[in-house]
Amino acid sequence: MNLIMVVLVITSLLSGILAIVSFWLPQMNPDQEKLSPYECGFDPLGTARLPFSLRFFLVAILFLLFDLEIALLLPLPWGDQLASPILTFSWATVILVLLTLGLIYEWLQGGLEWAE
Image (tube, rainbow, N blue to C red):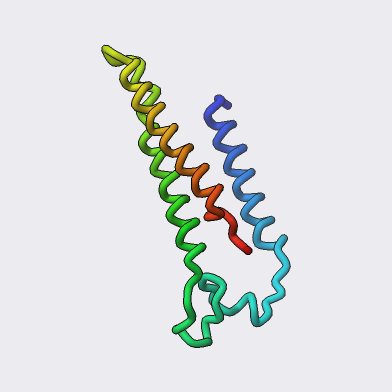
């Protein structure tokens, strides 16, 4: 047998064994809480006029901001192939310094504390 057939047989057997075990291994004990839909910690059968916490939105916006920072810094490894890589790295440093200062400001203002 060649190497490709051995790898295909091993991966097929391993996948099959894991699929079979995953059906038998978990314990099925459904109760009322597991069967009810879950939406942001609110009771789905109650009133829809409950106020949302602004801290939840603040933490979500901060997460999106720092997630966007990763997208801005993603092409940075290719910046050393440009004619002037110093300019690229200086702009990346400016972005990181601004985000770090913003994080420190939010931390000092108490915006990152989930519970009071």
